[in-house]
Length: 183
Image 1 (cartoon, rainbow, N blue to C red):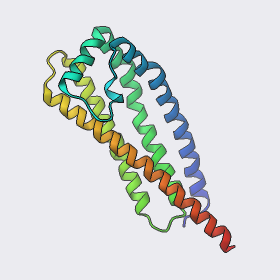
Image 2 (spheres, one colour; image 1 turned 45 degrees about the horizontal axis):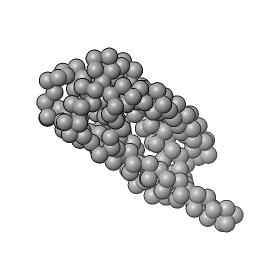
Image 3 (cartoon, helix red, strand yellow; image 1 turned 60 degrees about the vertical axis):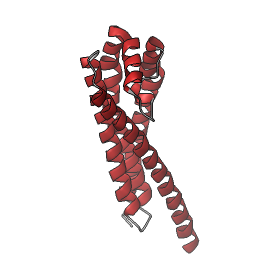
């Protein structure tokens, strides 16, 4: 158990980071990704949790046209370069905050590892998208499959981390009730 100051401080970080992450996510979903989908008629790479094939990547990149690809690079990618850090900070601090009442530190360590892993794969995905846009139309299947794999890992690890954060919150609430009964 930690002193009372640290969990409250971490809680404020979790809430602040969550507000920033949600703001960036909302901007991406409602503005940049919506625009990319409207221009291309295709779902953007970022929104394909199960990945994509070279054919699907080519349809999206071709459908975007030169202006749409430039928009991806100058609007969506900059937002998606800050979002993973805010999301990882949100998840890490939330798990750390809730984990402060749990005797087992495994959830906290696993949560931090998964949060950082999620952000790492999101950055790898972004680099792959930039590479595909920059070298279009000469995109190799290897780059598409590598980027698609990063997308799949990002999606899976993010889902696991959110589930772990919810589980940690559930355990935290059970511990808080047990502590209240003990008093």
